[in-house]
Image (tube, rainbow over all chains, first blue to last red; front, side):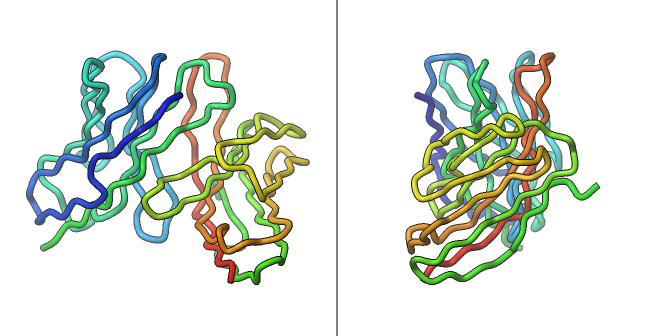
Length: 115
Length: 116
């Protein structure tokens, strides 16, 4: 079975500081990896995804993530955060050849950017 | 192009009442999903559908039923609501393609349900 663990439930940070949101996964088969963002009172939207190729993936709003197969991690980073980045962030995985395309989500990390 | 829409946005039920949540998508997507979101637990899959007339159980299906009579609609039913079903419910859809092994899921805005 697959599982996703987001190591921090809440991350407070000051504006213009760098941030890293940590995600580890467990799977016996190859996976695709994703980060979704949920702004207050909204649905989820895709931030970035890793399917294959370069292990450094760039997404929207200046976020990037690095896939590390040996450490089974997919940490999300941004060099300088803005107040508008305040949101909940979800890491998710899907196994290759998954029937129905079912995503498995982590518990979420609340990013709070303070002025 | 509205994307994925959900009806209603908010609802309060009493224990034992029933209700149906409606999800509609206008992107001609084959796959549709119902998730529930609870604090500290992320999103968990309730039921999903890979096409019109087909449904399957997800991770937490108990207490819920679904129907996909039309390709664009996916209904989630609670026959006898319980306080444990207080949650935010999200619908999502994705496009099936033989060329790729994965297609992005697009999410609706959510339905906040409270069961007293």
